[in-house]
Length: 497
Image (cartoon, helix red, strand yellow):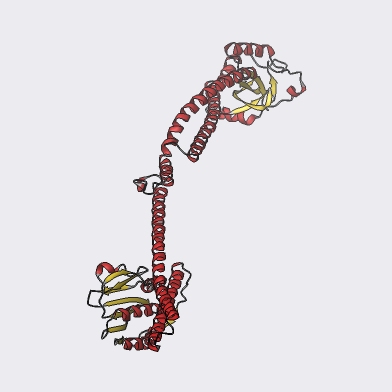
């Protein structure tokens, strides 16, 4: 799979960052190595020549004095000393210091210059060097350039009542100039080759490492592209074992959520089409009846008896009532489904509401010769909910119960207080509902008739279900064919404080 533009940019940035870090690390390593190597060389040189000044004193000052009888420096002696030293090591510079550290004489200095005559060497490093016997790496002043520090060897002497020091710079100016040019060139070549080889191998290893480390990221990108291209069921395998397990599991969960939402949208669209078809059918039926009877009344108004005219008008009125009820249910359900109704919950007495509903439906029940029973405990505590919505839910259940209960049957309202809630149950002695159809009765535009599911009018139970969802409750159904039906739901008990 070709990487997307995003992944290409990410790979390039990761590689460049990795190479930049290696480049700076290589430069830093070379500089640190040069510094450590330089110091190691100086320390080794000083340690090897630590006793050089003392050997010079023991060998040259045993028979001769560094000062003549008049107290002047024995320049001939120092000329021989410098000649012998430089024959062995041209890097060495020998200086004669008095006991205060002032430079008394050196072949490499122009003693006629005023600043040379007054030049003084710091005695602290010299005394420390003599005390440590050259076992410690110590830098001292450079008589030719006091701003610089050099490795040295030093020893004290006393000859003809004169005290002083032999101070030998082990890396003289000429030597350092030559060495610096060679050393810099060497390290430049070494550094250039080292950096080139380092970057070459680092680039290969870096690209392979980045490629390996971004394997999971590429899998995420691949899965995203598959999903974008329409493969909605593609998921990342073993997401919990990946390096980016959180992202992988999040992607899988997100994909599942999106697919679930798409399925819901498809289901809603299907239901919308069914709803439109059912509405068209159910609106057409009462409208056709109304239109037919009105047309008959208009055409035969002179031929109809008063009884026939009253019958026709009663049928028209019944159709109008049915039509008005259906429109009201549609309007109510649409608001519930669109979440346009916010429940205004408050504590209320469910027993008072049950009494009101019982009185209202008692007349309707008597007209159908149905016995309406009310079973409740007067001490039932307050419940918490939207009283108008709860009343609407009970009314819908009562409408269904009376509608499907035959003459001589029984419809009951029962209030059952429990520990944390109150159960409201509406039961009837109607034909009942087959178990395979019980899950369908709460869908909009489904109703039961003699135990069967029938398309047609009926939003009552769908509205009840929506009202229960607003109360974080559920509506339960208990029914068997020929044994009646019971619907129940629960409301939480209201606790003061």
